[in-house]
Length: 185
Image (cartoon, rainbow, N blue to C red; front, side):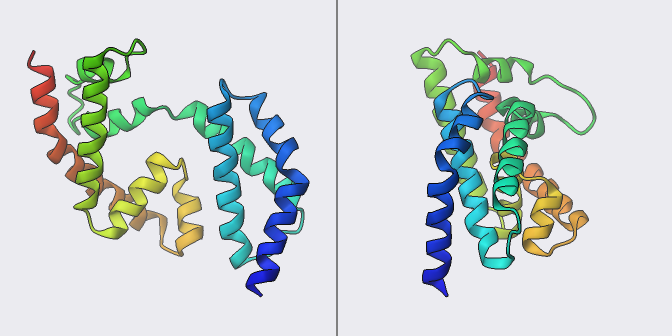
């Protein structure tokens, strides 16, 4: 059975890979984004092949690719920063921090802060219970919807939302010191 599954995945990649990449490239800004999206599509396909058969493989692949492209356009890193640094009371004094992290002109200082931010974020994620960490990663970094995560895990959407909320609260708390150090200058 595992050899049959692997053979099916390989034949599907051979049959659809080149055209699917072309389809994605036409709809994103650069080749790196296109390749990332294609990799996400293949990852999702390989996970799904284990659990249930796909009747129209080509249609399914293009639909997933379209959804990933749409999610990429809708969700930029800024939404992650909004989630992490926006206070629940609506007070938004973090725009300076977001602007600093999101600046397109890379200087040694901005690159250092970005690297430090991501390093601290991943350290804080490692402190979370696995369920909270995984929901946060799937939702914010892999652009999966709560419904997709629910279908994948069998966990209720409301439970997933709650887990993500606890993750965000922990990350806000852990990254608050970094935020204060960076924005005080």
